[in-house]
Image (cartoon, rainbow, N blue to C red; front, side, top):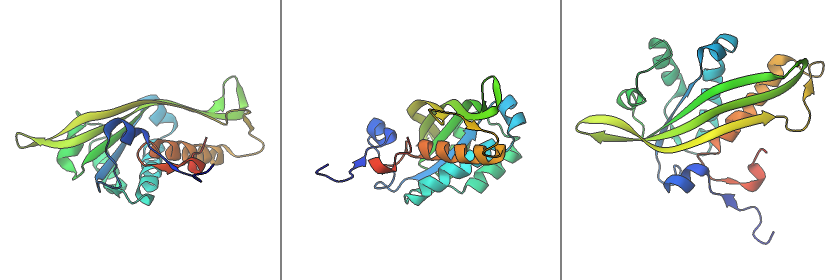
Length: 190
């Protein structure tokens, strides 16, 4: 109370002691999902990629253009052998990999109710040159789960499915982005 609204140290900085803003690092963000999620939500990877990168960029962290990353992934049919493939292709200091295992927006056993759920893992890799090759070395990993809204689901009569998914992805994008920059407690979405 005496200090106003101090900034909270983000998870990435707490674990690595690297501040992406102060250290002026360039970041590449990539998202991946299993085939069953891609089938049901074909634009989910790009929507998350765009959402997370735009929020990180607002904090004045340098970002590799998400359209270039998406184009490269499209050229490689959405898959890659190793995360170091991105290190070789793009000029970035860190690579953030958001790997979702589960995404849903309907309340279980109640198709007329919406409640978003996500499960996955967030990895960050530092790009270093070793023996003339750029390598992505793991420096950060965090399990991620989300449920929105927490208390009561939303009736489908109140909101279209597309609108609910957009709101939920906004929440998830902000939550994921805040792992990588320091923020004020009042900015915390949950």
